[in-house]
Amino acid sequence: MQSGLSLAFVGAGRLAQSLAPAWVQQGLRVVAVASRQMVSAQALAQRLPGCEALPAEQAVARADLVFITTPDDAIAATVAALPWRPGQAVVHCSGASELSVLRAAEQAGAGIGGFHPLQIFSDPELARARLSGAVAAIEASAPLRGTLWHLAQVLGMRPIELPPGSRARYHGAASFAASFMLSLLDEAVQVLYSLGLDSDQALQALLPLARGTLDSAESRGLAGALSGPISRGDVAVIARHLEAFQGLGAAHLGLYRDLALRQLDLARRSRRLSDDQLSALAQLLSAA
Ligand SMILES: NC(=O)c1ccc[n+]([C@@H]2O[C@H](COP(=O)([O-])OP(=O)(O)OC[C@H]3O[C@@H](n4cnc5c(N)ncnc54)[C@H](OP(=O)(O)O)[C@@H]3O)[C@@H](O)[C@H]2O)c1
Image 1 (cartoon, protein in one colour):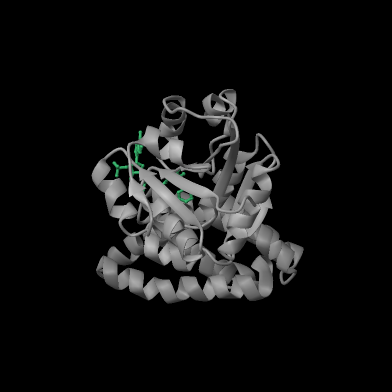
Image 2 (image 1 turned 90 degrees about the vertical axis):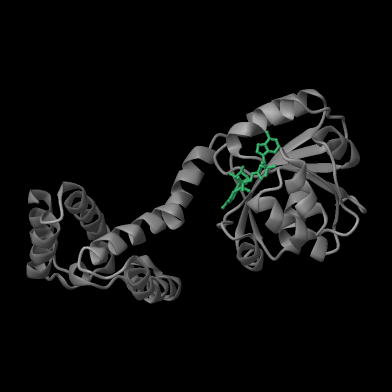
């Protein structure tokens, strides 16, 4: 990597608030931050020694490598409005956007790339502590590719490469381990709420279970971690679940049934059930 590389961020939101201080802590230079509102840029820049909050054109002019950390829908217009130069590089951090959104910078001679940290950044401080061990999905040509691999590795992240054209599928898959997991917990909270638990109480009751499940998945793999009535072939218990969820309405019943049907794949792979048990479960669920 080029020694003394200078970094800048355009978009001082949750991701920038996590990545910029993490790189500075590792001795990298973040020289400028820009954002839609100067006050956001200032709030981040003041936490980074040697960094200034600047209008985006000036921030870009100062840096060798610029991270565009605006919302995805603003990336293309933001990049098209800024002055780029050969020898400079611009990188977005979107999981789902192709590198074509950076075309304007490429046409001006800059290198372009993608650096997507596969982590959740709702709380920038918490996320910063969890960068180490997380994957960074990188898409870029040399020499930028090597620089981005290095930037991932200094944070203890594990770089992987994404083939061109694959980002929407990759990002959609990641949703299952992040925001969709929140939706699953939300479903469980709503059902417990219908029994009189308040939402906080319900979430606190479910989180240790969710953590235990993730720990088991890590140690035993998905099929090995499977437990619950489907893993045991307890058809009568599933019938009682279906009846209970029918009482809650079609949306609750439909979600339960679709997930339970999908779980039959894991049950098959766990090799704990006979074909007869698997077909009895499939029949019951398909009829619901
Ligand atoms: N959050 C995550 O978990 C996560 C994970 C991986 C990747 N990412 C990616 O990281 C990128 C940033 O996401 P985020 O979660 O950090 O978003 P965010 O918290 O909403 O922050 C985006 C920031 O961009 C600024 N902004 C909005 N429009 C702008 C414009 N036209 N020009 C300059 N700045 C603008 C806003 O600034 P003001 O405060 O100045 O209004 C806002 O602070 C996205 O591409 C996202 O897909 C996010």
